[in-house]
Figure 1 (cartoon, helix red, strand yellow):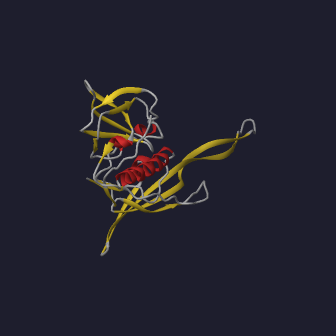
Figure 2 (cartoon, rainbow, N blue to C red):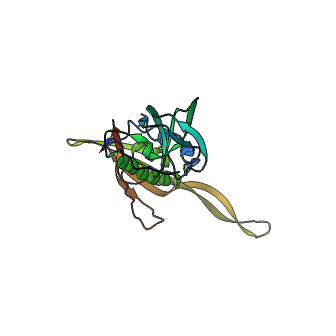
Figure 3 (tube, rainbow, N blue to C red):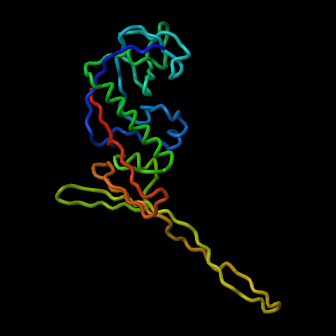
Amino acid sequence: MKWKPFIFVAIYSVSSLSAQIKRVERKSLLDSDPSVVYLEQTLKKPIELKIIEDTAIYSDKDGKSRLGIIRGNQTVKLEAITEKSYRVRGQGTTHGIAGWVAPSSFSSSDPDFIANLKKLYERQIQVQALIATQKVAVGMTLDEVELSLGKPTKTTVRKTADGQSTLWEFVEFKEVKHYTTEVDRATGQVYRRLASVSREEKSRTNVELQNDVVTAVEESESLEGGNVKVIVPPLVFRW
């Protein structure tokens, strides 16, 4: 499949995506192709683009299996993206069709749109990898943290003259068995008996959020050197 040069459009700003992120089950992200960003799982409001002219549409993201032709001069819904192709849904020559199309087939009035889509793609690939390993990073949204770690053990809201911040505490516990040593009076044999089982803290992760975006991560136990990962804050698209 040949890609032709093209121009896209969008304006983006770095701010909270809490109103745009759709809350989904973690499994739906992990069952998907890890090299694809599915926008329906990421953005509440769909992105629509205009197709310039009739163009080939493919069943696979690599452009190897051609489905047919998608009509030009129509607005289509952008369902998923990779670095080199976009999955859209629109009208084919005889009926509705969905598949992968070359980016050069679209137009828009903002020349930065393709760059912003690339930034969105790169960010979401990082987020999907973090969720898959149940990790969090500075720059993630509240909803993304919940997808990765689940519901917090404790929530603290702090209000100051400068605004409001939220602290989420995630505590992982472990069971510790306690034994007593006893002697069998009849045989004199020494043995251990389970006396009780206690639930003790194994690790703790504190996540601080402002405007529903993570600003700090503190971990009480580190398995990988204690480095807190930082990703690009969420992007908001306006068109």
